[in-house]
Image (tube, rainbow, N blue to C red; front, top):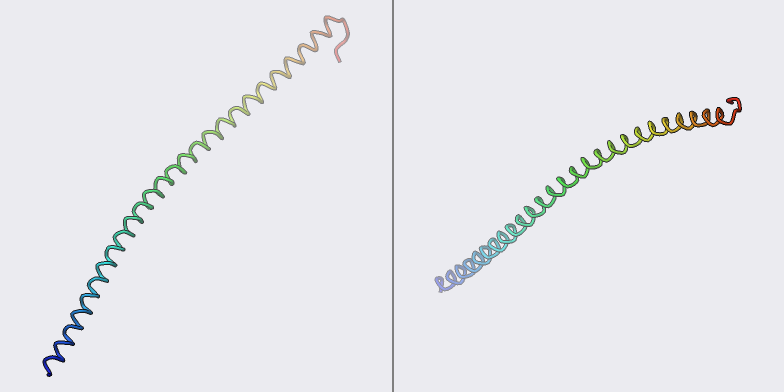
Length: 100
């Protein structure tokens, strides 16, 4: 009878060890899937980082272009003011009125 009781305990232990093994395998598979997802997310984040960096460069280039345009516009306005003043003087000479 003692051997039957020991056999039952051994069967229970075998069952427990088998369940633990299955749990370990399931956990390992889950961890592998999670690792793959983390890798995928990591690649996506890296790509987004590159895109953000590229957008930053584009913004800097746009700022430079706007500054150049503003400087050019300022120069053009100065020339236009000078031209307007010259035309006013010319019109005054043509009309024979003294300059103001």
